[in-house]
Length: 485
View: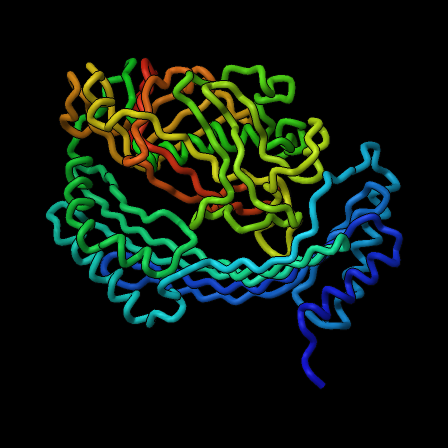
C-alpha cells in the first residue's frame, strides 16, 4: 500500500469540514527546512539545521473561526484535528457578536516555485563555513577591531493550501541572506559596523554576489572610524537616509500602522493599534507630495511575493500613500469588507503550519523620485547622512518614534565630512513624512527584507521586503543616544 499523499490529507480534512455544515474551511500542510551558520571571532560558533512538518486546519462555522494543528501528518490524525477545529469554530460562533464574513475570491489552482540559480542546501557546508571564516579574518586584520561575526541563513518552505471553495495551491519557496559585523574598541567603548545582504527569495548566488571578502576591509575601517568619532551635538538637522535605514523606518512607521486589523483595534491588547484609523482613509495627509508608498506583493524575489497568501488570495500591487495622501491598507478576507472593499489585498500570512494566518505588512516601498544622491546632499547646509539599521522605539499607535542607525556622517554645506556616533532622531510619524522634500531616482533603489517582524498572540514572525531610494528629510530633531548606536 502506497504512503498517503498531501492530497489525501486535504481530501479527508475538507470532507469532514463540509459535512459539519461550516461555510468555509481550509488546510495548510507545510514542510520547512532551514540552516543557519554563525561565526564569531574567527571561529564557527554554531550550525543549526532544522526540519519541521505539520498541518493546520481552519474552519469558519456560522461566522466563528476555529483552528487546530498537528505535527503528526497521518490519515488518523487529520480527522481528529479537523473535528477539533470544527468544535472550536462552533464554540466561537456561539459567543461571537460580530460574525465573520469573508470577501469573495476566485478559485485558484496553481504551483509557485522560487527561481534560484544555486540551491543553498546543495552548497557544501565546508564551503559556506570557509567563507565566514575568511570574512572574519579580514575584519580582524584591521587594527582596532577586537571582535567579528559573520552569518549565513537559508530556509525552504514546501506547502500545500486547499480550501472548501476549490482552491488548490502548491508552493516551493526559498529565501537566504548573510551578514558580517566588525566591532572596534577605543578609549573603553565599543562600536560596531555591519554589512548585510537583504533577505530575498534567491539562492546562494545572493551570497556570492555580495562579495563579503571585498566588503570586509571597508566595514572594519568604518567600525574603527565610528568608535573614534565625536558624539553628535543635539539639535535640529536635515537628514539623508539610505535605503537600508529607510527599510526599518518604513516598516515601523508606515507598515504596521497600515495593517487594517490594527486600525480596527484587533491588536490593542498586545502589539498596539494604529493612528491611521479608518476615518482617515482617503482624507489624511500622511506625507509630502514626494511620498508615494506602494505595496507590491508581486515583485519577484521579495519576501511577501509568494503568489498567494494563506487565505488563498492572489498577491497584488496597490497604493498605500499616493502623493502624500493615505489611500490604502493591508487586508485579509475577514477585515476587507469592514471598510467596504469587495476583495482582500492578499496580506494574510502565518509563520508556520501551527499558527493562524493574520494580517501582515506587505512589501511596502517608497517610490523613487528624480534626484541623485549628490543632489540630495548638495542642498543640505547642516545635516546627517545615516546608513543601516540601529536602535528604534515607537509607541503602540505608531505615532511617536525614535530611530538610530548603523553609521552616521556629518553633512556640511552639501558635503559628507566625518563620522559621528550616538545619533538618535525622533519625531511624529506624519510630521516626519511631511518633512520629506526629495527622493533619489530608481538607480539608487535597494531592497531589504525582514524575517523577524513580531505580531500576534501567540507571537509570530512575519516576512516582508521594503524597497527605497535615498530620501531627504528637513528639520529633524537629533538627540544623543550614548552607547546605543
